[in-house]
View 1 (cartoon, rainbow, N blue to C red):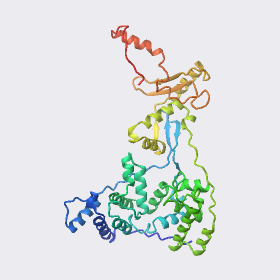
View 2: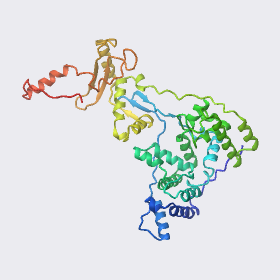
View 3: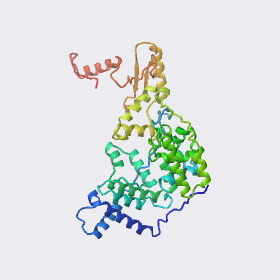
View 4: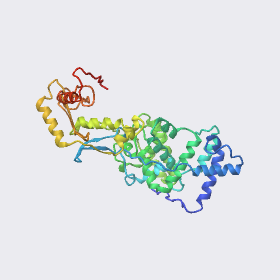
Length: 433
């Protein structure tokens, strides 16, 4: 099996003038005046071209680097693990060295055959899209693997519904901003790094995000075991994961796989014999359902404390402006969450509750221990096990109005009130929230 070329463009050679020439042509042809990137004051063609080029170069170049599929951990004050928070998306991040060469070749050949020679932009394809779609939107192709990676990162990292819509809207302006980010990324990352990022973030259908999850979902294999027919099938899914879904649409999937194999043979990366043999291979699917995501607090050493911390962070705007984004960053962001839980105090509190009110008792009793002066929450204990089974509960009894406060503190509160001269007839309105 012949290896595809791996020519890397010389970024210091004469490629820059040619790149700017394409950018200028694209800017004028795409109507950047209408897109709002070039001001309407510019009138002459030469001035318009210059302004378009300057506007392009001034577009943002910083692209966030997402942390994909990495569990977050909650630690107590001593550094012991309280719980591991798992993501809800089916992701199995892989290193590029784990991906077989045949899989890399298949995805590049069908998605971006000039990947190893361009600088992030398919100028001809982008210009063709701009010239074809004269109404300010585009429906043509022209996206390189680098641009597709940029689009996926912007969508994954969106802080709001507006940002998510902006990452996918069909406008020439969005396409050009995406191209600017792709150029900047190619100057910082190697082709191998870009391909790794792309293969780990792109969607393959059936709730499988990234090539690692896709290999397991469709074939029950780790990514390094993928064969030529399997690789061609997965590479073909990227264009339309639903339409080419081999589980629900096997004939469409086979047809698409054939297209990928033919393209690989056309580009000289397969012999005619190899292509024919791969086409004759059955789909040979061995679907593996995505693993069920259990509540991590169920197995925690301090389950109610774990649930309280998780709830606090899910509502913390510092993690994102939307619930979906906060959940994503909490469960997949690889966070290390350090708390003030004291394991000795937690054990003592739980032991005291269990000895005083047995878990089987119909009465629910809870205890929260807060350190005076600092407000540090040292322990949270409930006399019932955390769970959804008989005699268990997941109600956050310590942080809701499910239980009234105990009576011990009332004596101290009353004493302080009398010391300040408040009469016994004084009453305060104290709603639950």
